[in-house]
Amino acid sequence: MLYIKRVGIVGAGAMGSQIAEIMALNGYEVFLKDVSKEFVDRGINNVRKDLEGLVRFHETKAEREISRIEEQDGVTLSEEQKKRIHGKLKPTYDGKRASDALSRIHGSESFDPFKEVDLVVEAIVEEVEEKKKLFKELDQIIPKKVVLASNTSTLSITEIASAARGRSDKIIGTHFFNPPVTLPVIEVIPGLETSEDTTADIIDFLSALRNHRYPMMPVRVKEVPGFLVNRILGAMLNEAFALYEEGVASMRDIDQAMKTGAGLPMGPFELSDLIGLDVLYHENGGRVSHATPDSDCQENVLFWKIRAKVGQRFLQLLLTASLKFQRA
Ligand SMILES: NC(=O)c1ccc[n+]([C@@H]2O[C@H](COP(=O)([O-])OP(=O)(O)OC[C@H]3O[C@@H](n4cnc5c(N)ncnc54)[C@H](O)[C@@H]3O)[C@@H](O)[C@H]2O)c1
Image 1 (tube, protein in one colour):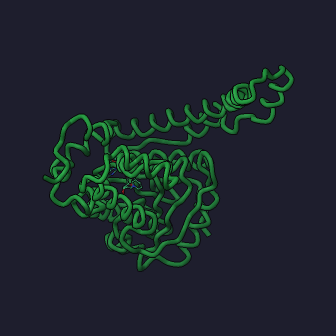
Image 2: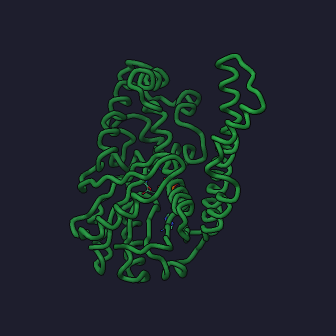
């Protein structure tokens, strides 16, 4: 049984900062580390903005419901009825809850506070050598009883654990999905040497967490390439790229068709944007998709990587930059 009070998170990017937010909202003290103060501050600032949005959403819930009823039914609700709606839809998250959570996140540029943590979640760049270097260092600094979890989307947990020989039984994959504050699933991936106790303890710990909307839902997955969700999603994204390359339909139409025909919340190209083209590039072994081995898409991936991370979206980029993407 794990006793967890403090969680160390390495990597304050898109995933690390939101994992920190979830832990803090669930009452844990969080130490968030990145390579520089600038990146740590950016991560904490993203949490602040996210929490502000969450509070706004909750505080306007009753007003939105009143407008919805009045517009839909063409009626004007009385003050008494409005009061009752406000009473029923009290905000689950208010400013105090958000500021308490934020105050539990402590930025750090060093591993000093990590000597006291009860669990570490790694969310750094998706490169195996970088992760191995980090796990080796963590293994030397962190008390041996502490579990080290990796948020890798694609890499082998067994290989990452090989860098921390002192505790390979306590190294495990905990693959949160983007954005973890609204998506509850977490793939829990034991490596070859991960103990049953570690796996069971981590599943227990994660099951008790909640994100903004749902209880988190850990699913145990064997260590296979792509794990579970991305293996299925990857096949769909590859097909979408292949259809586009064959000139079957435009990206916009493929996205629209999959949303309205297959009931997906976002189309395959929108999803590629959200995941990040650099992540897809690594996942597919140096390609954006298996369907695009020769395309300019590969050559432009580093350019796209930078643009995608600063918010210029894939669809806009393709539509406006006239990059030659279709095969002659
Ligand atoms: N983006 C996604 O959709 C997604 C979804 C699930 C899992 N993941 C996985 O989560 C991990 C992080 O992805 P991301 O999208 O948050 O990346 P990101 O690029 O947004 O953030 C990574 C952060 O790690 C920091 N970093 C790099 N090396 C470091 C080191 N040695 N020590 C401390 N900090 C370091 C970087 O400065 C950066 O701030 C990756 O393993 C990725 O595969 C990503």
